[in-house]
Image (tube, rainbow, N blue to C red; front, side, top):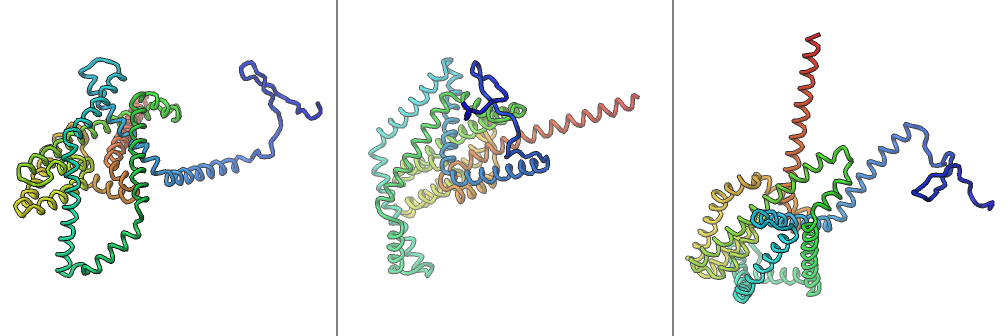
Length: 380
């Protein structure tokens, strides 16, 4: 009994008594100035630690962000379906998922053999065109000779790694895609739960503004994704039809790649155009010129007809801003950052616009208050 500490104060946690000792602590800081400096140092240390954690965990954070983008895409489909079917959200989400799976399975079932053959043919065609291009550059004295090229190629291949590293990369990509789908599906099932959790982390006096900003960002993201999907479908179908009409080989796979790459503005169009032109010239000069004309016409239609119409209904962002963000994101965050550069820019733009509206509203309120004060003083 002598070793048992004596409690000076007893508080209660429900029905259970909790003894609390009284008296000063050896770690207690009584000087207000020292306490203030310790708080400032703790804030700076916390900010530096948070920045370091973001740098270390940037890839998992990007996966979570990609999952949120996928959840926003599903949520847009659920909301759009709700205008037609007045049923529960869970049933609408199930219908959207089943329709998406049915579309993918049907597309690959109907065109799977043809697409597989065209993918193999596309690879061999691009390799042949690359050899021709490097040979022409070598003949012009712009590249090393063939023997030097072979030596550089062997050295590069030996430095890249073996088959196991490629398999590991493929498995990592599939795992990342699976995690993105799982995170997006879970968030799309109960979005309000996660929204309430985020609001709980914010101080109570800032929750209203935080909620409005989150709603603006999610609305902007849904509109952006809707516009992107329209652009992807339009570019893919137009490219496929035009290349097939001109007799360009592998028109279907080129149309699919053009549609997929349209999700990444500017850079995706350049890559799809290079593939299209390379395949076109592999079949002859006429088909190469047709491929160039198809690329120009599709991009002109997308840039001057489809994009302005979609931008009025969705999100209008300056091309230079989008391209600059893509360059920075690809350099800092890799391919996943490049794919998410456009959504990140749109959400940041929406948050800044909301902040500007709040600042303008506060400024108008201050001016009204000053006017009221001056009027009351003049009445006196």
